[in-house]
Length: 78
Image 1 (cartoon, one colour):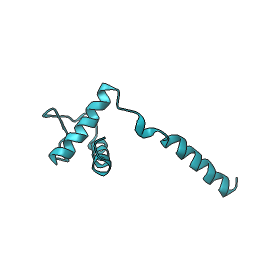
Image 2 (cartoon, rainbow, N blue to C red):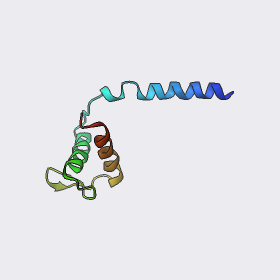
Image 3 (cartoon, rainbow, N blue to C red):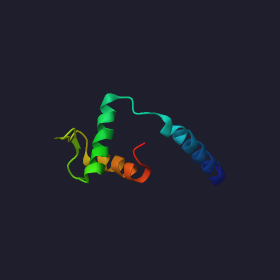
Image 4 (cartoon, helix red, strand yellow):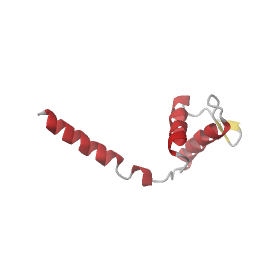
């Protein structure tokens, strides 16, 4: 396939992947815990020890929380 078709295919796949991605709310109770942990990480400034409701929470690797917290810093908590 020519390169032009690959670019069109990639653009279509990216559009389908990201279309409406920000309109879906966090509905799973467990996923909201991960989002809240990253939010508390940003608000407290403690980027090494994830906490939720004042308790340490080491459920996921720290890199996951860093990525979510970085997105909060860039785009806000909405």
